[in-house]
Length: 167
Image 1 (spheres, rainbow, N blue to C red):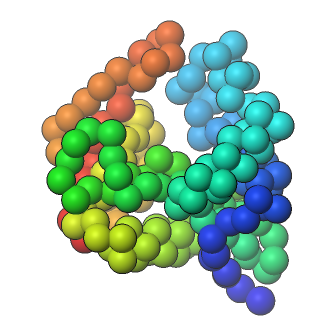
Image 2 (cartoon, one colour):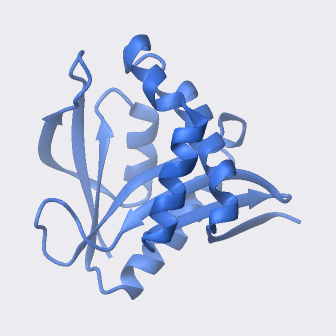
């Protein structure tokens, strides 16, 4: 069967919640304090979030590999930072067993094309400074750290870096 990426529907919300919760456990267990990460691992809460995003017609894509949900991307043609003609990627997550198989690149390519069709000339995203694996992936996809940093809202204040890609 291979890889299929499509716009998510409300029926996918449970799978989306599972992907984001399980990938947060894999990706952030050493970044976010355990007592704080727990709040973000509630699958029912996450499912309701994705249902709202889909209802609000945000860009929510789900990826399947051999018909099994493996990853997601959540984006918007607008951004919170007043960057001109700039879309934002808020989340791109894969279940850990699918890391390193080229599937994240496929998700990224699809969302970039959608943002381009929406009139975006550039795309921004934020990534934890200590998340070198993700940073290498974004750089491979053509994103460049633009020098902007901020502290995350978690108590240990991990630093986030803004990456931008011209599209």
